[in-house]
Image 1 (cartoon, rainbow, N blue to C red):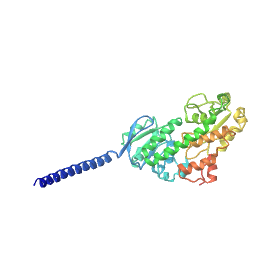
Image 2: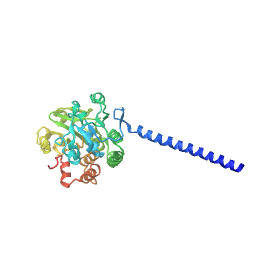
Image 3: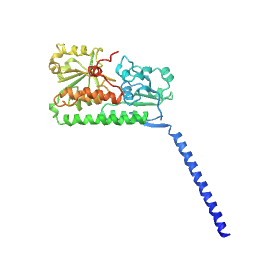
Length: 363
């Protein structure tokens, strides 16, 4: 009798234990489901330091900073851009390597000071990227669209900008960002291991022309200054940011190398260079008299100006400044690899040359 009672009691205890276990499992499952519901959004920190809550799965992107469109494309999400500031005419290579952008509407002017709210709302973006400090941030945020401010002016802030963009776009973009940053760091090390050993007084003065009419040049505290220094040059301009200058000032600086931005002048880049090379006043400048005037390459975005292609820009710049020291750098080969890896586009030899010569793709 006692044995039977013990067995009954044991069974009761087992049943209670099982019920408790099931209850805990049920609670655990409920918590997991609730956790999933809570994590349908993620929080990123944008370039201004503001925390922005964005959807976990972003399928529609508005990008009001032209340079950043190419970063989104490089991270594998260019086909998700539904509103932009660019056109196929202004950046033909970006639309060539990211054909999905052809469906995007132009909802902003060049510097996003003017925004078509109607077009923006109609296209229902999950996120809007915009240059840091833009006056329209508050206005757009009130529409219920998450706004992430983005910017960079050197290689460290470029990497941070790419990381925060990838954080917003998801795991696939995060992996692409890691690969890009690794590539950039690797090329920076290869180049600066050489250029850092060159005495400062022996480095050539490099002038970056942002425009010819009026004359504008890029100074310090810019990404332009960063790649000039990395490539072993000294920025001839002794001020911060971009400023309008006189030809007399350029004669005074007397740069050894002149890099003409691909955004200068008409689409005929050779004409822009000819304007300098054939001008009697310009011939008094050392860079012109020695034939060291170069048109910067132009691809998905202008390599020299706030581009994901900064990783190619530093190699090109190092090669033109110190051709003897960087014989092993094959810019053509690196360009083909970069576009295949980061834009999933196989460039032909002719297309590589067009990009290096700042020429648009064939129609």
